[in-house]
Length: 296
Image (tube, rainbow, N blue to C red; front, side, top):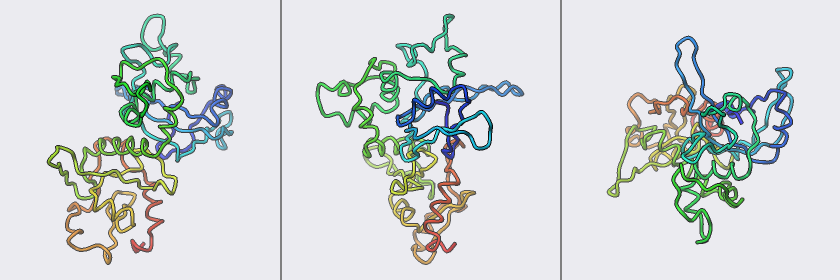
């Protein structure tokens, strides 16, 4: 399915794809980002990759555009892949009918915004996007996930337990943490400090802006890479962030010595990729939740 907007609004669907979209209701779908071309500058963009999955709860008419529909997404079920998954690996396209007779991806196929996936294709895409975390969850030695696979060497089919692992909190937490830490280069967004421990690992944590308890999604745009101390302060509403990424502090509750560690310009240190910056709707939710503490 074509991607939802960055604020996780329902994806728009042309009316001709409604029969296919309705079959998705109650099930998980994969989101993909097609390539785009800026005709003025002739610059090709888009990752042309699968990048996340979520459960569809309903399909309804678009209230603003006649002839279009919207797929309602359970935002709490959304999770970014640990890494984008290309349409094609060494073993061929994940969607086996994607290849055109002349080679390469079929433009007609990639232009279809809602496509059916076989269970085996869905499982293989998930395995490519999450297999490191999922493999860590595997307990049975005869489980096909107990063997290590490279991204271009994914087995043809998997059992449904891979989806059960995906929706489990430990797996989602690891996938979310990986996506956020990678986006921020393992650097604290509030202090701008990157600390590497004696084992060569970064001392950084992934914080949900809109919490899991409040049904915040596991997308990098709902995350901040923070040191443990500032993660604690943020989760308790003693630190907030404005829509333009200014850092807000509950001055009377936060020790001045800690305030001295905040980046000198008092703005978040953000990833270079604007597509991974915190979304204002999540920042607003956090501020509203802790309005009194932040003195707003």
